[in-house]
Amino acid sequence: MSDASDRLDVLEARLEAAKRYLKIDDAGVQLAELEAEMAMPEFWSSPERAQAVSRRYTELKEDVSMLDAIQNRIDDARIQADFFEQGDLDSGPELEESIAWISAKLESLDIRALLSGEFDEGDAIAEIHAGAGGTDSQDWAEMMLRMYERYASEAGFSYELDEVTPGGEAGILSATFIVKGRYAYGLLQAERGVHRLVRMSPFDSQHRRHTSFASFEVTPLMDESFEVNIDEKDLRIDTYRSSGAGGQHVNVTDSAVRITHLPTGIVVSCQNERSQLQNKSKAMQILISKLEQRHREEFRAQMSAIGGPQSEVSWSNQIRSYVLAPYQLVKDHRSGYEDHNVNEVLDGKLGPFIQAFLEWRRSNEQD
Image (cartoon, rainbow, N blue to C red; front, side):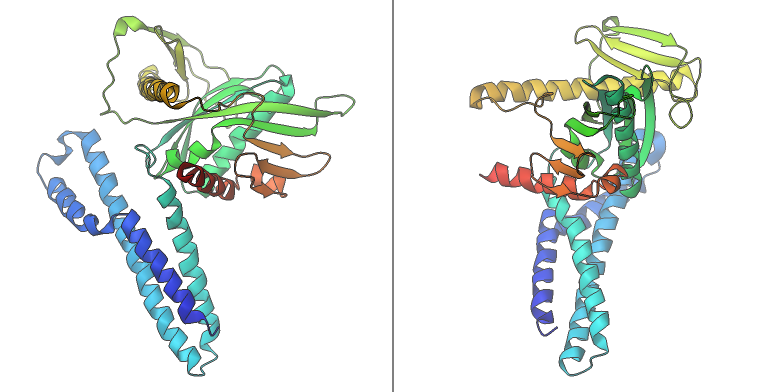
């Protein structure tokens, strides 16, 4: 405990770094500007703008409050450290508790330093597709859907399932869902790619070991104010009776909507809203997000052609393996991070993998 002051110095230095990358010095000015806008009589005349402003105001207030709380806890811990160094041994446990609390809060803030993309703070549209492996892969895709639903819940995000296509015998062929919350897109980017499962197949009468694949894709969710020019003539809109796995996955209705963007071949569906109009509106929002994502990917491809090729995710280049037999291990093939508690990972414990990937990505960008 004699090094408590040094440990607190390190923690305070990390706090100062957090203030810089969160640009907390600018927060006061931004908050004042947002408060002035929110006080205007016509503020709610544009609901989309009002919601965006209110959300940003809340986020900034949370940042300021959290940093103030950490600073106050550091100040209190320094007093506790002084008492301990003067012989008050009873203050030791309380001091350790304070240091642990401060460290945990700073770790959650440190992840933000790894997220600086244009849309990293926003919501995300996620898709899962079963790949090679037949029924086993379809079952694996459904397991992944459950894993991400639990991750979203643990991370404090909201989760909306918009479309599920059931598998032939079990599982799902695909699913589309929306994860809403601050940094949802930035964090879920770490999961983009092919996921590989190795296990003793429950669908094999001889219970042999099978390898299954499913892919995870993520796109930033654009709000209603985001403008993408779409010609109505380029759209084919089909309505149909939704059908799915039932239960927690799908509300069966007569109002499901499928929109095909003819120039690009992008197809989006929504079947989980109460009306055809709501399903169409949500499907259009997803389509706009996908078209914007495609535009950015085409731009990156042009830059890649100039700067040299980059590796792409493929079925032979999975990002992570989940091995249930003959041993138990989840391993990320990019960062090298491993966890032997496969059940916990499948229950949504993805935070350490995501942080390891973000740190790995940052180190590679700096090389």
